[in-house]
Image (cartoon, rainbow, N blue to C red; front, side, top):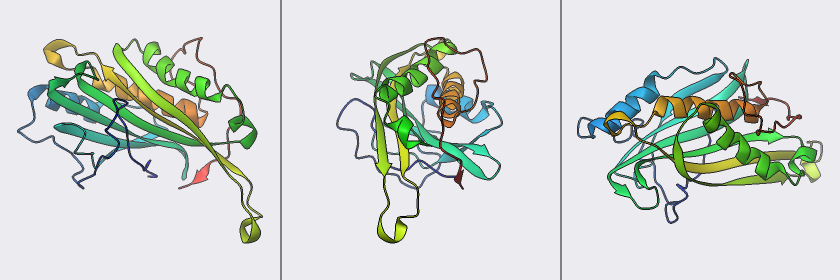
Length: 225
C-alpha cells in the first residue's frame, strides 16, 4: 500500500515534529485507558467500502500520551487512486486546543489534472469534502483545522517526455465528540474519512451525499502501486 508520508499536524500549533517509533500499534497496551482501548477497537473492527484498503501503521509518539494510526489507499486493481493516514490521539488529562481528550489527525493526497489544480476554488472544495463527509454521517465534532495544498511538477531535459503532474494534499484535524463512557464514535469517523478518500479519488459516494459538497469532475489517471 502506498502510505501517505510526511509530518502530521494536529492544527493546535507546535506539534509538527512527531516521530514514529516503529510500533505499529502505538500506545495501545494494557496500560492504556479503557476509553482509548475501546476507541481503538472500534477502529480495528469498522467495515469500509471494498475499494478502500486500510491497515495499521506506526503511530507518532510525541503528539499525545496515547496514539494509534492507520493508513489507507483507494485501490483500482493494482493501482492506487488516493492514499492517506489517520491518527487517533488521546490525552486523558484533556488538551486546551482540542477542547477534549481525543483528536483525529489526517493527511490525504491524490493526483489531479493540472488544469483542475489551477481552479481557484479547489481549496474550498476540498475542505468541503472533509466537513461534508462528517456531516453526512451525522458525526459530532469540534475545533476543525487544517490546510489544503496543491503542487505541480514540470519535467525538463531527460525527463521532458513526462507529462506535468499536479497533486492535492489535505492535512486536517478535528475533535470527535465523546459519547457513552467518554468514547467517541471512532468507527463512524473512520468510515467518513474513507468517504473523503473515495471522493478525492473520484469514486461515487457510498451514501447519500451532502448537497453542499462539490465534486471535482476530472481526475488524473490511476497511479501504479
